[in-house]
Length: 297
Image 1: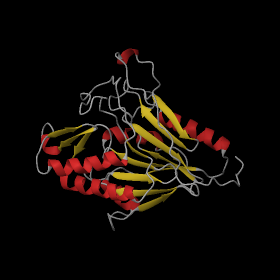
Image 2: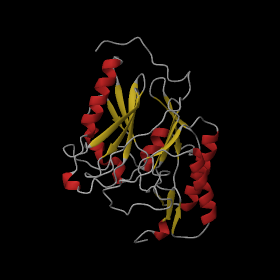
Image 3: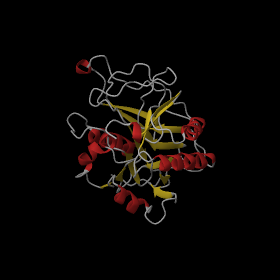
Image 4: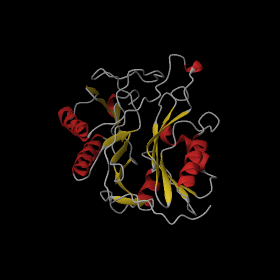
């Protein structure tokens, strides 16, 4: 591979708002006869890819994000299925990386695998990258996240992950999961919120931490150019306040994946309205489920 002398400028222009009108794969009436790809790939721009897992493989159908910088790429989350045969994530990532490097050749290019949090449907594919050359996989557990991002010293700091001219801002955002991390990409303006904020059921493990996290995200977003708030699932229908049942594998009436800073503020308002009331609380664009409502708790 010849080394490129061309460095991509990820900073000077600021984020350019782009439409995200994507017809996401959303399952089919018969999972057995589903003909969608195992992984849908959407190129937001030539350096930014959004992936969605097929519902026929796993009903969670999580979204993953692959971002390219001058020196390395980052993959955020690895999906809900370990098997490379049924969920060929590494193959897809290697293909996208190969295409990107063909257009932007450089030596010594590496891959970093990070996580939004440690639940199984976001980390199952980690093993596919364990033996990949020039790859670092950071564990999804609390200790690994604290060590890598430096949150052990100051959980309120904004950690920086430099991909080579494309610097992600990373925040510890517990509440849904103790090791949850939110990522802001100044190049696209994406605020990548994992399972903390998305159009679906917001399961809250730690109510006090969740409230602090949402307040912090609102404050953070007010000082950044946020184009889209992007979580990792769609579980709502287009009918306000109505979500698809758990285990659903066909969601023909999904709202968009992307949310707004205004909707992020709505979650903060909902938290204050709910107060100390346990249970399941439906709002037009999301449902907040406190841990004390969940089965078995």
